[in-house]
Image (cartoon, rainbow, N blue to C red):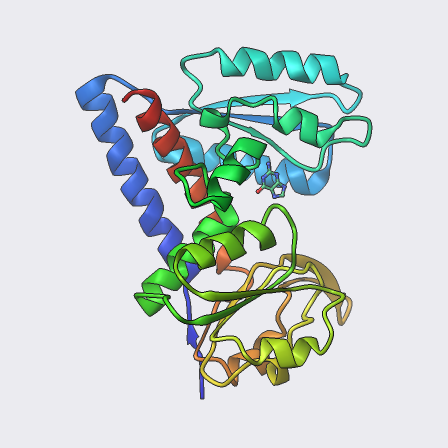
Length: 287
Ligand code: GUN
């Protein structure tokens, strides 16, 4: 079997175009421009790239982008004061604090200071609780992007066996909640799971979010399964820098029914969903 390649880049472009059209209508008919504030503390090189891309995409869909770059030695009190200001600013509908934060800052405290209605990452404990109990919430962007691609490929997901490899708060746990919400039979596996290959081979839907380069190999994939690769790992191969996922693409693609590539799979969907969440937050704020 040769797997269908799920084109996240094209899918994300389509989502962004829909968001842009909605933003244009909001501006024209209601005089409202959705605004996203992104806060970056310190100089982490990967975070700087992510923040630059978020800024460019926000502008591209016609939203306002408010960038706040703070020095690495920013105190917790200063960061919390900025979040309080953004919470109270009616031009800001979404707030994202780029993670990881420098070690002296308490991420949980900082994230939970964001107004849950403006928490476009869906990381605030209120949004986590709402998602876990099946209530209307802000949904974390990466799992939301994965769910959109899965619904598009499968139609209904009810009754399918889904295995999520990885138990992070950002991806693994919310992904499992979303799949459960669509009536999948969900297993969360992780680095300590016994017989991981055997568990993975039961999956009609296999989501890899462990952060280990090419850990999921073709022998762990059920023939015809849909494989979603959330990993973004920078490795060196044959003396060259290379971006690979958590899935060994070639061996998995030879067995799977459908697969997301890295790059060009889940990655572009994450930013598209951030924009969609910002639009949702703006619409909810304006009734
Ligand atoms: N760092 C890596 N991924 C993310 C994300 O989805 N949101 C935030 N805020 N920081 C991140």
